[in-house]
Length: 275
Image (cartoon, rainbow, N blue to C red; front, side, top):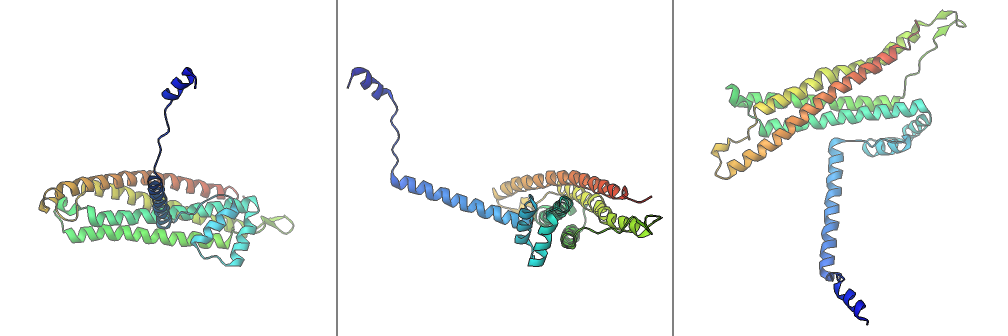
């Protein structure tokens, strides 16, 4: 070997040799981590009930994983998705189902937070049990409303878009009053959705954010816990309630945007009136 080649060989870094046992242990830990992340993602998807949106065929396939679809229903949805208006209808209803499912999960989280991490009665000098149970019950009521709204959107999806009668009758000489009635009837779901988003969900999120911010307290008074458990639980409680407060504020703003979108869709329906 030439002196120059010998010097280059000495200066070049040698690859670090790893033992097969170390490689096997690292690979097994990585595989275990991937399995836990996959399970966590699956549990999160079940908890939030989010249907993946995309082409109609993919959306219907994902819908069938969460809801029971018969073969005639699946075939009718696939046929509906072949047209551009039908694909837009499916995407709109699935988006509404996802939004209602998110509200259901969010208010369930708020009910859990009020049950364990909020003691608003201590600040207001009221009955602890009565006020706590009232806040939990209100959030569970909103969970039920959101769940029923999910079912309603799913039934509307299976029913398909409403078929409007003809605009005019008697060879186009007279207006058809049934057409305008059908148009007004098709706008009612958007009006109900706008009212729920603006009056129920938006107000609920902001009230939850305010009450959790004012009454953040672990279910057991922290001064009764042995050191350092009181300090640790205080920090953990403050962190969790702060996250929930910011989450409620963000969802309250988004609920207002969803209400405006529903109002715009309601107005767009009225533009088709035969006046």
